[in-house]
Image (cartoon, rainbow, N blue to C red; front, top):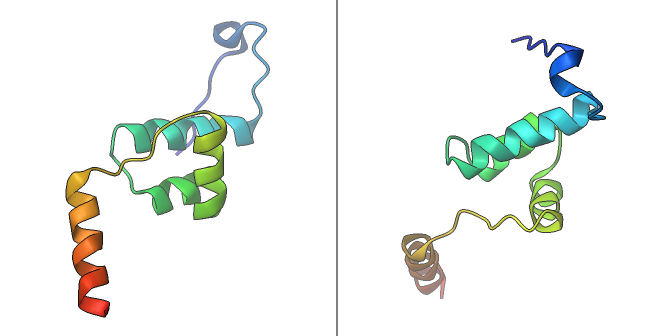
Length: 79
């Protein structure tokens, strides 16, 4: 997919291709359209790198009580 944004729409906003990819990936992740790993791939970052970028921007991760329960059950099964 190729996205072209006319310069007049961006105005004086300085935005590199890498910044745009990270912003797009974060948008997909926040809307829960992609997993954290897939968002990292879109952004061109590792999962830990993408997590670090979310933290830098103070964006919470998608992790709810059901995720916690599932993780706790896995840990119990492993012990």
